[in-house]
Image (cartoon, rainbow, N blue to C red; front, side, top):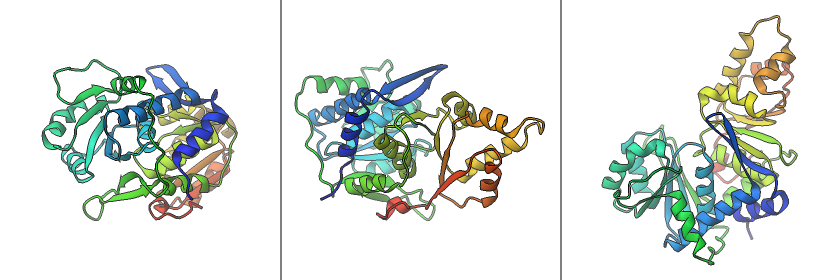
Amino acid sequence: MGILIRDILEESEKKFSEIIAVKWLKKKEILEKSYSELMEEVKAVRKGLLAEGFKGKHIALIGTSSVEWIESYLGIITGNTVAVPLDAGLPAEDLIDLINRSDSEALFLSPKNKELLDSILAECPKLKKIWMLQEEEMDASVEKTAPLSALKAVSKNSNVDSERPEPDGVATIIFTSGTTGKSKGVMLTQNNLATNVCSVDYTTEPGSIVLSVLPIHHAFCLVMDWLKGFSLGTTICINDSLMHMVRNMSVFKPDVMLMVPLMIETIYKKLASADASIPKNVLADNVFGGNLKIIFTGGAHLDPFYIDKFAEYGLKDFRWVPPYVLMIRLCIW
């Protein structure tokens, strides 16, 4: 017996259907979707992929955090398809190499990376379809491409949903950073992902705010922010740019955040450079948004100096996540 991500998401949809699952900024407007709305979109992607003949296929994603990216990713891994999330910041030749080496036959692509389209179409012969993640005008003459809405629309003409994946079936292929050679694809099963979600030993009230600031294609962010967050019924807010992280903390007022040490160090510099006459509790409310209770940190060593300093601003719950545990099928804690 094992656990499926689909089981976790369907349970959350039942328990938290009216709670807001995701919030994001569109210019200055905050948009949102409830758990029931989000899971309807996930199901539409999943059914669309089945209807389009992609059962059992590998499907890549290139883009930064967006509601469309997470809908597509969840639509892939809750069906009998394998998600291959790629770093949108890589050079075109590296992305093309990873698409080809991962045997991906379809791609979800952010319009921000649209300049890659011609190269990908020319050099990735196995790709049968490319869906653009955000809604925008499409050039109908460009072969193999369509907007995400077209894939979702396909599902409306089909009552057939994908079979549930097997717990030991591969859910996602995460590529390493390649610091010691070529990036290597690490195959994570449904049970790998779901067991890690269940092993993250923290709870928070449904509707608690999580501000997601790390790259969404990393297993660290995917599991700790998104999959764990959805299992608890949290509202996950998308940070639109690292340059806007501190500003967005005051916009979304998070209860929980996942960071790497460099981010914590950057925030401390902002705190330390402020006018010394401002009371630390007032400064903390302005920087953190007033509700921040827990910071998870991992990926590298955090100097205990920062834990002590943040305590002076009222933030006393730091939790360290050992790096790379997601790659070796161990519990996170």
